[in-house]
Image 1 (cartoon, rainbow, N blue to C red):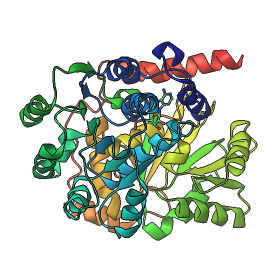
Image 2: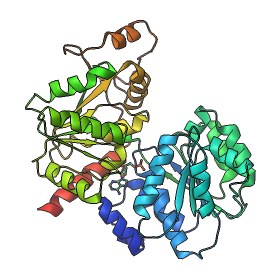
Image 3: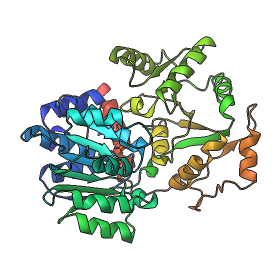
Image 4: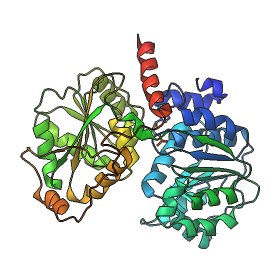
Length: 420
Ligand code: AMP
C-alpha cells in the first residue's frame, strides 16, 4: 500500500516524501480512508504506531479542500504538554504545503504568546484540557465553528484525572462534527465515554508498539546527572560503537552535548528543529554514509531518520513517555542487524524507567561495573522509594499481534530494496 493509493492530495504527498515516509503504517492504512469518508473513528492504538499521522493527515486534507471560513475547525485534545507539542509538530510537518494554520496551547507557561497566536486565527488547535478551559473561560477561544474533534490518549486522560475537564468541554462542541477517539486501552469508563461522544464509529485496532523491541540488546546505566557526559565519553571509547544516535530531551541539551564532545576531539553533530534545513541535511548525510559517528538528536528531529546499520542508540535522557523509548531504540536492530540500546538513568528518571519496563514487559539489565555508577540512584532503589517491579511476563518482551512490528520491518526491507 502506498500513500498515493489512499487518495491523498499532492501537497500532503510531497510533505510525506520529505519526511521520508514510503508507505502508511497499519493504523494509517485503516484510519485515513475512514476519516476522509467523514465517519467517526474509534482507534485502539498507542504512541509509536503512527497514529498522529493517521488523524492529522486526513484532517489536513479535508480542511484543505473545504471553504476557508474563520474560526477553529479542528480541536485535538491530548493529556500532556510533550504529546501536544509532538502533535503540533506533526501538523507542521505534514501540512507544510497546505497553508493551514495550527497552534498548540498548554499550561505551565505564560498565556500571552498563545493568545496572540489565537487572535491571528488558527484552523487547528492542539490543547491540553486545563489551558483550553482556561482560555475558553477568558473568552479567547470559541469552539462553535468546530468540524473535527480528536480525543487523543483517552485512557491516559482518565489516569491523569482529566476526565472532569473533558466532560466540561464536551457540551461546548457543536453536535454536528466528526469525532476521532484514540486510546491504548479500553477500560469500561473509557468505553462509556467513547459511546457518548461517537456516532456510529468505525473501529480500528493495532498491536502495541512494544512488540518491536525483542531483537535489541538493552541495558541501563545508573549515573548522576553530572556524570552523564563522562559516561558518554567513556562509552564512546569502545570501537564497537560504530554509529550511535544519542537522544536528548531538549534542543539546547543536544547542542551542549555536541559541543562538549567536539572539545574532546569526538566528532559529533546535533540536529533539531532550530537548525537550518541545510545544516540538518549535512549532518544526516554524513551520519548515513558513516563519516559521522555520533549524531545527537531530539525526538522530533529524529523522525524520519533511517540509517542502515545503526549499531547503537543511547538514551542520554530517558523520555517521560514510555512509547518514545520503544520508538527510539527501534532505530537500531533493524532489518536483521543486531542493535544495542543503552539508557542513562539518574535518580529523577527512575519513574520513567519504571514506566518503560512496564510497557515492554522486561526488566532492563543494569550495568554495574562502570566508573560513574551513581550511589544516589542505587540507594533510591534500595530504599524502595521507587518500586522497580515489572509485571512478570516471563522476562520476555511483550509480543502482541505482530502487525505493527511487521510494518517497521517491512518498511526497512522495502527501503533497502529501493536503494539497490
Ligand atoms: P506516532 O505514533 O504518531 O507518535 O508516530 C510514531 C513515529 O513514527 C513518529 O516519529 C513518526 O514520525 C513516525 N511515522 C509515522 N508514520 C510513519 C510512516 N508512514 N512511515 C515512517 N515513519 C512514520
